[in-house]
Figure (cartoon, rainbow, N blue to C red):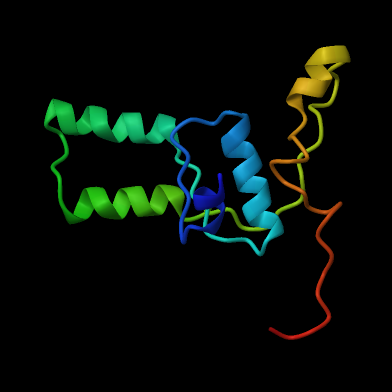
Length: 113
């Protein structure tokens, strides 16, 4: 856990509770780079590689970077539950506090860094 918190970049391989806690802790500590892989899009790209319709190289690298440019742990307001859901479904659809502590634990800084 400590190594994941203190590393320059964190990329979870599995989005379980620990990965979510690490992501939230890193956000709380100052929005350290945490890349959440777009698994579905990556599988699509890797399928293209396997089929031969795309080759490894700069084009593939560029596509992977484009896919993840907005998935790097930047601050964002926590998502609420999906409207119209009730009970346990409502609870499960809400983004966990420990995954994204904004706005409850993150206040705007008045001092320049």
